[in-house]
Length: 225
Image (cartoon, rainbow, N blue to C red):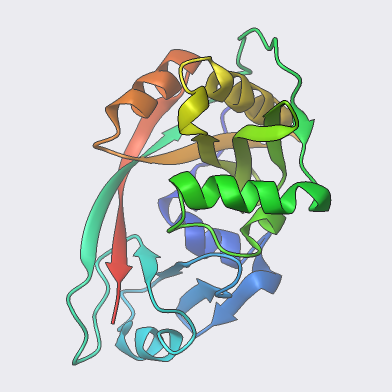
């Protein structure tokens, strides 16, 4: 199943003009997620982003533009560039799932946030979990691993928040959760993709082993003030 991938060239913009339209803040050719949903924004048409960044900085302390380098307002520090790989998969993953995987809901929220704060706090906000479906593995009623969905368009769903508690790594939980999440996305007739920092060699190797391929490099520009 091969479909037009153009939406992935600017994934945040296309999520905010499609599935996550109701979670967006519209600054014209610059859009951001509402600050309690996600710290990400994007722009099109080589827009001068300085005005939108200045306005958005009143709502959230640190945030990211995903894509081309933004133009910064005067008086702001230069944006910090992080480079990621955008990876994609077109076939269901054939990997044994031996753990009980639980679809997370409101009663799991505090455990989810506690686990994320421990490992992955910068990209996750109070309502990020409402952007898609999240799944977890529990041991002795404790949430020890999680994976979920974030950016979404008509045809694509991003796998995100691949997190395992440091005391429970090396047990294959991430592989099983990614398998479950990716195959669930395929069952919705959509294509899974993900983003990973180019320096995170362990996760990159894991994703490749499961069948993901690198589609492109993508830049995340961190804006602080």
